[in-house]
Length: 433
Image (cartoon, rainbow, N blue to C red; front, side, top):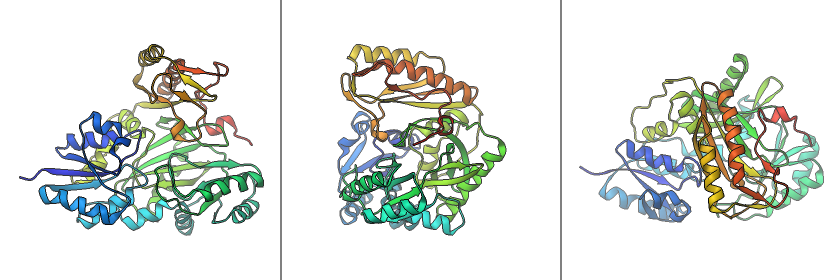
């Protein structure tokens, strides 16, 4: 009997990438990571994950590597947890006759301008927007939409390159920077187009969807403008039933409008008054450790569901608990360093001892330099907590994050450590420019 393999085409560099491989093993399937640089993912070596070095951005090079694996084993499924490779994984799965989303739908979804047009055309509420290929076009779009505006790449994840611009000069500067980039943070060719959109100030949420079923509504904490670094999440979101239902209905409508509906989708929304508007749809499971929060709060394992769906196995989305789960990411407002090894270990140990903490981690080595976060890459660590309610888990997360912050040695004032204040959501701060 041939071995059964789950091909993982690249991975997200932080968060749940490791868990995809672990869940495959739990399902009796051997995970194989196909990557141009497996060293990008430390967990691969730490877990003894089988890897194949191949240019994953080059389909003519990727396919022979897949066929070679298929010659000696049964390919049970193909996935990617990376925003940049979900379409590639869908294409390979389709070519092998395996389950997966429509590659065309995934590609259209990943292009934020195309996604906006599809959603607006289907009547799904979105912010005002315009696509631009030149600086002058971006400035003109901002003038029409009204300042402030958000300027972002048409492709990307983790808030990379997303910026709030309060003046036409800021629009021109940031548009020029984005349009001059020839490659993104993964070294892949960057499109020479950007998106300019109206800025919504309401509270931000995500809805985790599997197929066409809304599984969870998550309250999001976002750092201060002009950047949009996600600093934490609480689950379940504390909302009146009417607003929760509106968010889930809008998220599912967005997934349908984009021709998705296989596997997981992470839908980000903001409330515009009482009405939700879709910020973006990601055709993959959420990052930011949100799947872990869903697992702790509701007993639903989104990563396991995605792995089993890719392998053609039965998937359960049955909720077996109603608890709270939260995550807070540690960021710094000022340049500094992590402390020496002893201080780092003490901070981690004390954070883990806070009641309700189920995980605490720092992402940098002792004495590594740190600075203000511009996107997800500036996050320095996290704490995950559980409790009988989202309010209880949020309180524990705030306490543990403050303890974890003792690992930092800022060069400025010791208080210059960004850890969201209790209840600190976009609407609580009344974000202004």
